[in-house]
Amino acid sequence: MSNIPLVGYLVISTIMFFAGIYGFLARRNMLTILMSLELMLNAADINFAAFNKFLYPGQMDGVFFTLFAIGVSAAETAIAIAIIINIYRNLKNINVDEVNKMKY
Amino acid sequence: MAEQIIFYVLAIVIVVFSILSVTSRRILRAATYLLFVLLATAGLYLMMGYQFLFGVQISVYAGGIMVLYIFSILLTSHAGDKVKKVSWKRFVPAVFASLIGLSLCSFIIFKNVYKVAKTVATEPTMQEIGKAMMGTDKNQYLLPFEAISILLLACIIGGIMIARKR
Image (cartoon, rainbow over all chains, first blue to last red):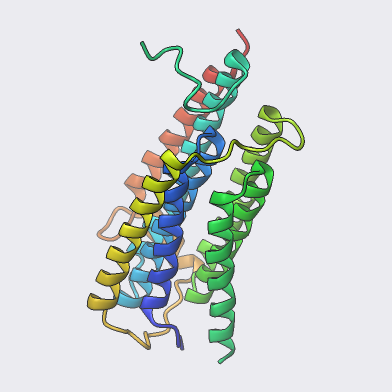
């Protein structure tokens, strides 16, 4: 049925994950940091589905992990964007190195 | 053969656009590239034979989350705004960390994961997924389902509390 080896999926998700790591460390805008986080979560989801497909065909554990991870990340994104919009409303700025009023 | 061509196209789309989406300086473009990555991921799920995951990925990620992102980008930045250039002090450690991690993980993958060429063609039907989600036996997931429903409820309430006008 499938001619694609497991390694192919794993390599794609690894590259996606480390692109996310780079964005998380290098970028300073809160929304872009959140996008990098989204990339990392997505890479983890691909891994769950691929391992389920190749190592445990016939079971559905990986599918459900992916489903619940998508649900959790939707919730997390909604809350994070609410917080970011609130910060923007109060400080007119969403760069993480300039938002430090509550720090000290 | 056709399957492999589709896989390579999806792989190239994912790699190129995920890198572009973390390096693009216009934030709305970064969000659009992220949308492409999410759609290509949905294509990967379809190639693995998980139609339900495909639908969920399209409707929740590409439909719901991306709309939230685009709304918030339009609310928090002006047209033509560019993100500040990444300073060297941040760029070097970030590239360093991600390259080290990438090479380590690829080394582990290529060394240890044996190449499974063929798997049994099993595509879970919608009926099986529904039964597994609503049952309480072994390998059934009613408890996480309820937990995530409570999480979503808490998220709705929290979103209203955080974003309301004072």
